[in-house]
Image (tube, rainbow over all chains, first blue to last red; front, side, top):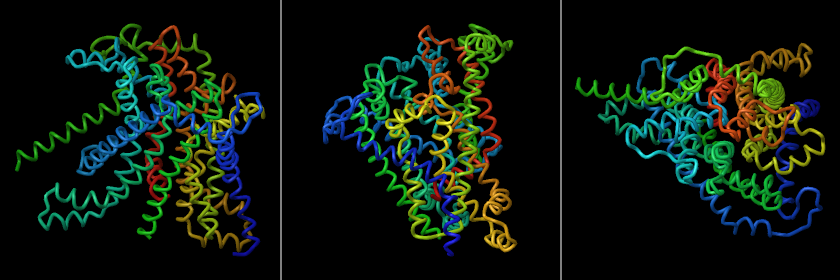
Length: 290
Length: 277
């Protein structure tokens, strides 16, 4: 490559790099500095070492938020994956109006978190909600999400699955469509039952796509904020807080910037651990494909 | 054998119906309810036949004028974010497609890693800085934030799309004396249009719907529509469901139609972005 062409690249790369540096990289590094200092608005900071981390890691409120987040990630993301896998197989098995159905199941992707919360709050409203009415008519227990923490968590899980299912479904369905059909032909000729060809052909070949989609969803479920904030505000009595809501409360409600920064860095580290797994899988797939 | 076929088809039909109810019922329900007169929203069982009325929309107009200002803000912020993200991603995507070096490869991976940092982390240091720079509550800051969180995906996508344009085209243009900006504008942008649309679709859906950044960085002047809706949900005098549904319908319909029309680009983008890195 000629040096003149090298220099032509710089202005082309600059906008992306500048945006990422100024909005994400430098602020994130500054959060490290914040996390080792104690400060609130208008006061000069003083160095406190690991104190903020110790405070966060020994705070029962943080343990609760972390536990809620982990439960949501594990339960909601895996449930979502199971449904998406089932949907992909259903769509692949030959359906009438497949194109229209596909667009229909994509619809929740367009819905904002705010409107999603408005919808599901009404559907499950204990007094007037249609789903609650249906449950009462069937003599089933109601979801008392406004004051029963475990019920609120179920609500949050339903909402996140509803909002993110289209994404997971598209990834898995695209991967399923990419599988060569002669493999299934061969399996059929060898006398494999549909269940056998699912276990021996579909699952092993879809495995990498499932892992990539799962890691991606772990990373995004781990930062969950709006759904929880708008649905319960972390209440009742901070019982349904997730890590991002805990961070928000520390920073913007209690002005405890040090502990909030420590929480933020804990989030970055966990996200980066998950991300390194994600990037490792991507690179291996690219290498195998190429 | 025949009975088995019928059973399988019945099972599939049932599954499809469940899926449709799950995906569409909440959406159809709030849209239709926004046109129901007064108490009929709460009818048990829900009424599907009623005389449509614009009552809730009129109330919305009278009591929540701020919502329509929010729609305008959302539109400005969304267009700004999409334009910024598209231009930045196309330029960078071109470089990553046409040149390769160890340094470039590493920086592409770092783009993907950076994008995975949770947005709430950067609100912490940005909040005081944005305030000091006088950028709080402006369309500019929201557009920049939204674009930034999509330039990584945008760059990766544009790289995949530019890869499909033969290098000979830029080389021939370069021989004829075209400069790099001309090549980008006349050759790359038109031929990579599907990629540009895919990037724009992502940014538009995200920027139009986003809550967290709007919640932290705006208060009055640049307040977006989702933020106004969140205030309706949290309103102390109790939720006026009819008005809330009317506002939700107005906020939702444009982006819903957009996603349905653009579903091909969305799918191309999702699969390329999440699995090709």
